[in-house]
Length: 317
Image 1 (cartoon, one colour):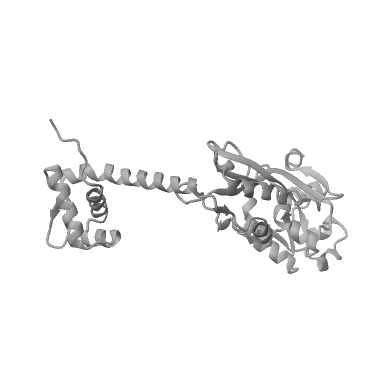
Image 2 (tube, helix red, strand yellow):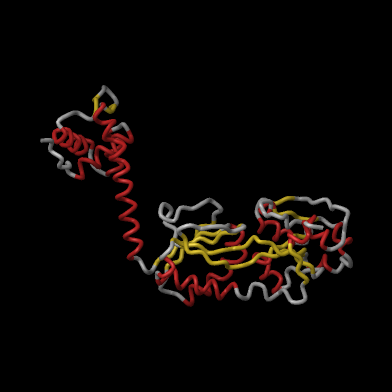
């Protein structure tokens, strides 16, 4: 009858690291043990198995057939164990919160409001990751994600719409005084945000000018890969930006930007807040959701007297 008992966990851990590096010295450094101690653990594993798992060469090691059989399962086992441990520790943590959002939203919306959240929740250690990279909640240690897009099914996730996007031309006050009609705007420098290219139907300058009754397509330069950079350029008087209300509400309220014409495009694109299903009940996540839901409620209060036209209606014209 075969002995199904596992060798000591330390021996398996030493083997996994050595098999991954194919180096006893590198594995020992990773595990913070001496090469002699690591070699002892691997020898113990081989005695338990009854077969060698490495061939010792002059300046290297290589896996035997037995080692190659053992390595994948050993690696995935430790990976699963690490994930389970991390998830358990995070489940017990009620004071730290890691949020990810895009760089533009972080710079223009989140960052100016962080002091308010910190004042209301001094017991929560809030951390931000400003990134557009597709995050894995478990792998990347993310509690809450704020994402912009057309939406869709977020399987296995709690999801709440934060801001329904709309766009309108925005300029510095010094430029606004020169603009009497939309045709005047077409002759100005038009700043473009490349981040909106995925939106369908298009909610771009061409669509806005059609809504405003200007049929000659304007030339649009320059193009920006980051929406906040286009907004900064507009605030500096470099031209007009087709501003997204999610990112420009503060500048409009403070008078750094103005809307010279009360025509705006609505779109299905929106910001939503996401977290793993069930995590929305954790104290620090629930506190953040309550705070951000309340904070975004004032984002669109600058829309008085604005005429809204949907991107779908413009596309049908």
